[in-house]
Structures are given as C-alpha cells and as structure tokens.
Image (cartoon, rainbow, N blue to C red):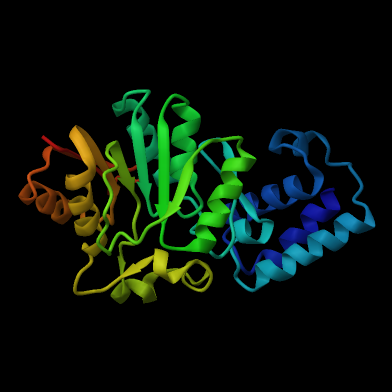
Length: 278
C-alpha cells in the first residue's frame, strides 16, 4: 500500500497543496481498501491487487481533470453520515454541518421541518438522523437532485418526504411547518472568476450563482414563503454569503421576522441566520 501512496503523491503533487494531497491520499486509499483512516496507518504493508491498481489509476485520471474527489469517488461524509454525490448536486460543506447543529439545538424534537433546495438531501437527512421524532420534508427544483436525495435517504435508512418545488414560483398549499431551512444559491456571477475551477467547472451552476443585481432573490422568496407557511413562533434558518449576512438580516427585519440572530462559521465568516415568525 505504501507503493500506492507514493504513486498517488507522484501523480497528483502538481494538482494539490500538501494538505489537500494528504486528504486525497486518505480518501482514495480508504475507498479502494475499505480501511478506516486509522487502519491505513497500521496496514501499510498491504499489497494491492491488479484490480485495485486499475481502480486507483482510473480515479487518478479523473482527478487530473480537476474533478472534485467527492465526485470521483461518488460519495462524501456529512455530519458523520455517508452521502452519494454527483454533478447534479453540490458537495456538502463543513459550514453546513454547523447550520444543522444550530437547528438541532434550537428546535423541538418533534418539529415539522422543511428544507428548501435540498440538493443531495444532506441537511434534511442529517436533521432526521439527529431528530428522529421530527417530521422532515425537503424540496428541490431539480428532479435529478431529488433522485440523488432519495437514494441518500435510503442509504442512511432515513424517512424524509422529498418533493418537487420551485420556490421562485407561486404555491397553493396549506402545509405549515415549525422550521424552514435553506442553503440556497448565493454567489453573485461577478465572483465567478474568484471561484476555484474544481467548483465552477463541475458543481451545478444553478445551485451556486445568483444575478449580480439581485443576490438576495432566493432569500426574499423563501422568507415570503416562510411567512405564509410557518406556524406562529416558527423558525427560519438560512446559510448565507459571508458578505450578505447583514443585508439578509435587514431584509428579514423589514419583513417583520423577530429575534433575528446571525452566527459566524468556524472560519469567522457571517454564515448563518435565524429569524422567528411572531
């Protein structure tokens, strides 16, 4: 296995920083061998089969194109759970784990929850995992994303009601919720040149970018939906662009959301917002 590790480093050293390369090495070896990261350390004398070498080289060729390792392997970890990911869905980020943690802490165990723009289903499925008594629903405008999310719910033996909805359109429904959460698109197109190639060239553009002249479009539409469909005292949670947190907070204040709160992520960026319907 040490030969395989050396081979990975030789092939990918020009594509990753040292810290990134260490992570990629662990992920590749773990996927191919089934070893945990700890087991990799104590099994370095393991000999790869011809099939394992072929699989490793297949992964390496894909990684050299710039494809994120999560898409190459077809899976990633989020909140301690394994999620299938493909280019139809965003790769779950660690910051979003912090949002899930906040919702769990702030919500009743039997809450009725809606996740808008669910993508891979990571938020909804993680919430159901940590709040098994909750009634969790999740929607997306992408039928491909919904298919992936349903597979992830099945993979994690998790009951979530997934359905199609375009939040930018009008909706006729009497459904009411205790919690609505969303991590919507929030990167202005003007920032596209600042985004790394492995993100903008592979992850779904519709889930990343918003018009430069209306970066809060999804937040406004979701907040309007929340005003109609949250119970009194219901909570709205957002993940936000680090530069638009206060603008989003002001918008919610003007829409009469109460007890507004903004939280920083582990990197110190304004990243999460909570508001309550009076």
